[in-house]
Length: 114
Image 1 (spheres, rainbow, N blue to C red):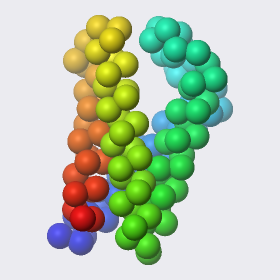
Image 2 (image 1 turned 90 degrees about the horizontal axis):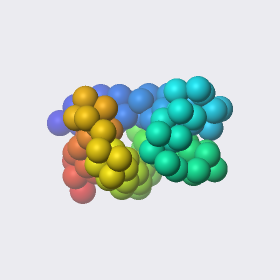
Image 3 (image 1 turned 90 degrees about the vertical axis):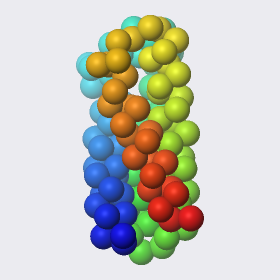
Image 4 (image 1 turned 135 degrees about the vertical axis):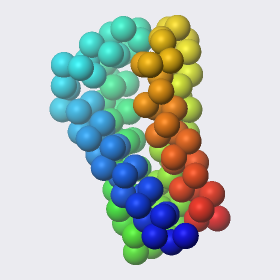
């Protein structure tokens, strides 16, 4: 079970590192998405920082399990916010499925560490 937890943790860390870096650096895709969702651009940067912090906590969590617990909880909560954002603007399931998957994966990692 430990190996499965580490694999899921690694996948989550990589996904949120990429997403967080894209948001913080202002990639065109993320800028346009936040416009579509009617959210301010400063919130894109804050979201990116939160995602990067969660990813770093997951990476540190390979050695310190409480860090992985905190990181997975932070990312699960962030994922719930993302899901609610997609619902609020009536995005299709296709547009919502990735954050839904990442939120569930984050919750699974959280419960595997309890």
